[in-house]
Image (spheres, rainbow, N blue to C red):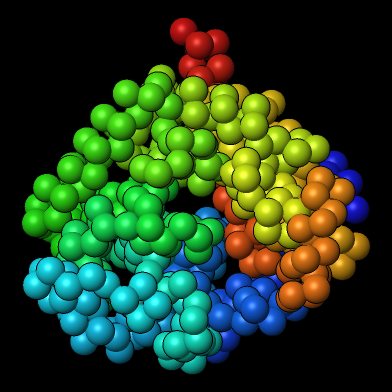
Length: 376
């Protein structure tokens, strides 16, 4: 356990952990100590690349995006085939759709993993646009344009089609956080390509999500599950489908805190059983990120301290915590199946960096506001 009093540079340790687990070609392994995660996910990698940009590691982030561009470009035919099949009225083969993860060499593995997860593709487009902005790139490199167009077409085609969610479950539903990531990706593609071609779909996504929430008074997990899911925190930050002050979003955050808080951290969803459903640094950081956006710096700092307390003496940061005590039976089931949960997850490190940067930015704005009022 690490004392979060500023005496240890945890941001530096997290940055080094990510860099040490980035391959020469730019791929970022999800976890170096968990066999099932010996891949690069578009979702994890894209959030992690964003964190690298926030700490000025633009070269490392650029290498990740170059890797993703090459990996996705290599499956253009598969993406176009999926689009063609859908337009012809054929049902998608969920296990053989464009993959959510690649080997570190950028290859596709067909091994029964639930591939059909479009959120990773939307997250990549969003992350790429953030990289260009934060690194002061003037425009999208020409070598990326075709891949960005292909991914935007894929999102537009399948945005409203049931697929697996960000947790790689429930492939028969349309998930709110998936719609949010698709929205963020389509908006990003429109900006990078300087076109309105994908904005109609983005606006339709936004209207559906907002209308569904208006009927319920909050944002549900999916069209088949009225519970809340902590990944819905991304609706406002970072994908900007709605404003962080939106009333339905505020109610969603309240429900997430009421139903999913575990020892100060945030679980995925109420009925989760994966490793006993512990609290995730990724989601606790996401809550803190939202709090920082709303100016609740004390609440955001509480989230950061919770994460800091979960670093090991070797500065590893795991995937989740507390599931062994909350639900020992399911925790043991997963241990018997896959071994102990990931002890060091790059996405956890990344979101700690993201939360820390959001806190610093919000604190700076608050300080500037105080100076402005004093000068008045």
